[in-house]
Amino acid sequence: MTQAVQTLRWVDGALEMIDQRVLPARFDYVRYTNAAEVADGIRLMVVRGAPAIGCAAAYGVALEAMALLHGGREAFVSGLERAFEVLAASRPTAVNLFWALQRMRAIWRINQQRAQSEIAAILLAQAHEISVEDVRINRAMGAHGAALLTDGARVLTHCNAGALATAGHGTALGVIRSAVEAGKRISVIADETRPFLQGARLTAWEMVQEGIPVTLITDNMAGHLMRCGEVDAVIVGTDRVAANGDVANKIGTYMVAVLAQRHAIPFYVACPLSTIDLTLAHGDAIPIEERAAAEVTGFRDCQWAAQGVQVRNPAFDVTPAELVTALITEKGVVRQPNRENIARLFGA
Ligand code: MRU
Image (cartoon, rainbow, N blue to C red):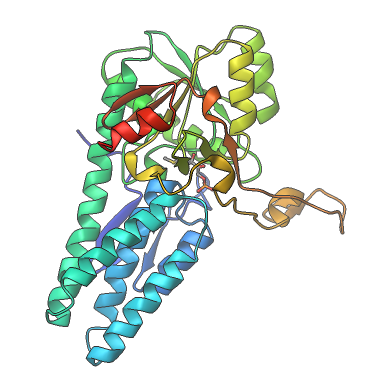
């Protein structure tokens, strides 16, 4: 199994990440050597997508430990604590960021009596492990989810939940890839996903690279296509799922879910267990990031909206669990997600 897109890679003692701000016009890697740089990379969306953000943050902690190797013990401990803080403050919605940092912190706690060089090596090994595990989980979700798609299915997706949003294979696009690998003829309808255009710039690019048929639409065309009978299923990824099954994902997902219900089209959410936040009872408690007005008033150097207009730019929305046909997890498919069947996933 080859991995077509390597979103994050470890090269000569540093983290390199594909610059997702400039795709598909340019394919560049940016190099990172400490936690503050990685936090900036996450904040500026060089890397984005919940699982990829988690992987990047884990590497950020390891890089900081390596950068602090030659100072004293006190500087090492306080520097590492600062690294956790700066990474945690980079973006608020995707829970994978906090999940990965918690995992790195647990490793740091268990090993804090060791020599600094040993701690740095152990943290780096853990960051690698989180990435390797992410691909394994995506493949497991892919296998479970592929069974839900019929041969010939036309699958609509929103945002980018592909290899670029993970350490590889993808969550929602991972399901599509796995179905294609299983010999099914799947075609993808990609919402362009205003305002950051993850669908147009990233999902369409990933699918074109692999020769999976893809049709790009603007977000306001989804309802028309559904009404015309041109969509068989919807699959999206997620940034955080509350304990009751409410799903936070890229802004516009809620609108797609409502439309899917209206047209009796199954609405699936590909969701690794690391994206489920059992500490939040329902979706209203999920923090929703508000991003810069400039993302709505124009793109790059082109501004199309009137100077001085008021803007809202929530980057995510919440889809109530009742609109979700099933969560596709690495442990299997959870139909009609609710508090009970989600708790069961965690053995409760
Ligand atoms: O703002 P982004 O691009 O980080 O938002 C990404 C999404 O909303 C994805 O759908 C989600 O993270 C799932 S990615 C497997």
